[in-house]
Amino acid sequence: MRRRTALLLAVAATATVGTGCSAPKVDPRNATRPVGPFWVDPASQAARHAATEPGVARIAAEPMALTLTGARTDAADLVRAVAGARTAKRTLVLQVYDLPHRDVGAGYSAGGAPTAAAYRAVTASVAAAISGVPTVVVLEPDSLGQLTDLAPADQQVRYELLRDAVEQYSRLDRVAVYLDGTHSDWLSAEEMARRLGQAGVGGAQGFAVNVANFQATGAEGRRAEQISDLTGGAHYLVDTSRNGLPASPGDGSSWCNPPGRRLGEVPTTRTGFPRADGYLWIKRPGESDGSCGPGQPPAGQWYPAAAAELLGRDG
Image 1 (cartoon, rainbow, N blue to C red):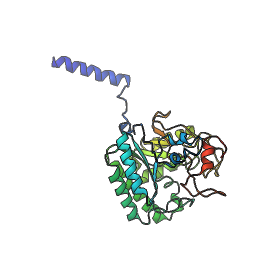
Image 2: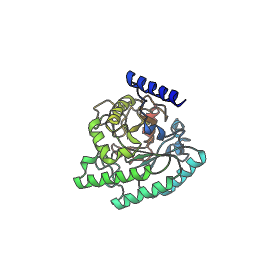
Image 3: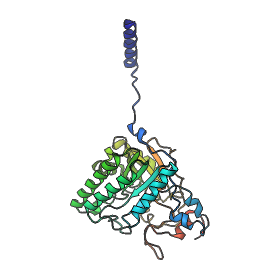
Image 4: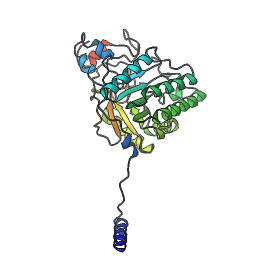
């Protein structure tokens, strides 16, 4: 019996070598993809305006990221969101946006933690809060895109803080963390991959693209697949919250409350790209990008005219 088994194994091995066949390559990140459905925040700004603004209930009904900016309400909002996601048995989506020198390149969302030590404390407190709850962490949008706006010493501190955050969040079971991947009209795939490598993408689930921007999903996916190839197969998310009528490539003015945009594809884990873990609404539709025009509210505040544009109606 042993001789027959040995012969069969030998024949099988010879057949494999002779035909050039090999076992399919396993993608380890497939096992850590986020699983929907995602938690819907009943206290979002859209939910609070749904009763008085036509169509806004359509926005409020979708899961969107809860953004932590260092505001006084962050701790209470996070406790509420964690409890809501746990009770509903849903996956929580968080956007952590509190690095020192935040939004240094544009300034409309300027601020962030005052010191590196303060940011490490933010990381530790968020990690403790989400432990045991399935969570997507979108880590510091624009942080790598705006890197060259920092002094060289501050660039190194930023890389260190991002690597530490990736390590802290990735230790947690059922938590997937995604670094800043900018968008298809910003950094090249090669430069993006270089920066992601220094920020610790090898220890993360991947990176997030088009966050708070308006680029076409197809263009984002094609570039993200290139970045993935250059970063050892990192997975990614695409923010589709506001790209239903995408910006034109090369339109550098299209990032701050531009007119004529529409809601994009609703959040889903069914994507058209092999390493895209999801299309999510990371930027909350209807919230301002900043006071970049007359009458426009500060970043993060509700902007009725922007919500109306996204819904395809007059403000």
